[in-house]
Length: 431
Ligand SMILES: Nc1nc2c(ncn2[C@@H]2O[C@H](COP(=O)(O)OP(=O)(O)OP(=O)(O)O)[C@@H](O)[C@H]2O)c(=O)[nH]1
Ligand SMILES: [Mg+2]
Image 1: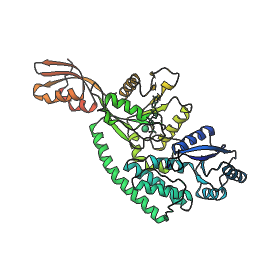
Image 2: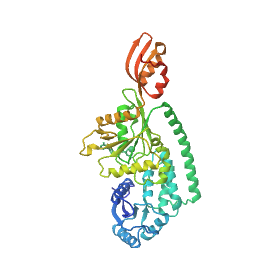
Image 3: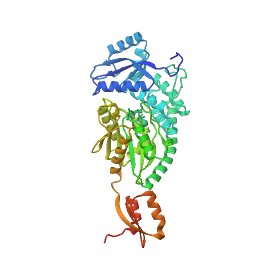
Image 4: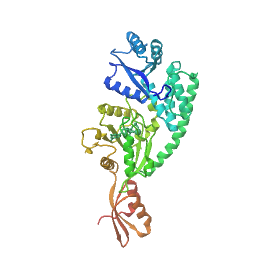
């Protein structure tokens, strides 16, 4: 890799306070993955066992000196901390260590900034970044995010020249506040269209199923597998990749099964522990798809030794965005990388592999059992003069039996509640 390569991986220190979080080692391994997702590499890890962070510098006095020495010895210039620091802690630490400090929220915002592709995602990230920046105007990290927010506003993703401190944008509070309200306004306009589309979808009466879960669990891969089987063509594939936060936008696809039953499946942003609050707020509209779903499929990376922590993170995040009481299927993915047999279903749980067709068929049956519960099987007698109704049902319902009798077409058919009501007048009352 050449010196001038803008994608060069930046060597950094990761640091944390071991007694302030439960499951510290897991938290640090998650931080390491986040660091890598941000095109950095954790060259050195520093831990401190204080009961409580120092209010001025986060780490204790002696530790700060040690950090400075270690950083110089290893020629490292950035430290990523497994916590959210106050703006003054960041400032003090930067002054006393000479390092550039990135806290957990700052790190996640940087990753989201490089991942955002759509206009909506760009605006959402930009709002969260500006809100984060507001109380931190004088620290160097704010300049990093300034540049990012500027890049996001221009529609270009990503940032380069990390830490070179070239363009020092002199934004004052007012300007940032103006930018936030401007971005919020733009987002609201975009969301209006989305709301119209959502209400149209709701009117169509199709059940909504949402894929949720920790980032990189295989939600998009599961979606693509199902779309390949029951969707309308390969062009509808969504982006899947082995990286954190590959998906930031919600995609919705219609699935049509051989029995003509249909549902809408949505794929959305993945979760990670302690997703920054302003990010959750900014992504609320994107996450609305999950909040309005009739069924959630929680996709879990069963091959990851930390999958239980990841499930806890997902549950906690869902609660935070107000998603409670929606039935859930637990889909333990990537079984091909484990010793487990698959597909293996037990009640609402499935061990599977997203690229295995047999697995996807079982998952489909589980979804169908849940969302098509309200269907009734009934016998209709449709006069020949209402041939269009027969045509509609042939296309949109599961017809179990067709008989041509003297008065018309007699169908034994499975109907959803909307159609059952609509065609009530044709129902043949059992003798
Ligand atoms: N071996 C194996 N790999 C899988 C399976 N499912 C997904 N993957 C891989 O896991 C990685 C992440 O998959 P995605 O579908 O992008 O994950 P995601 O949950 O959508 O991730 P985000 O959008 O980042 O939240 C990709 O490299 C997939 O190829 C599986 O069943 N087996
Ligand atoms: Mg995805």
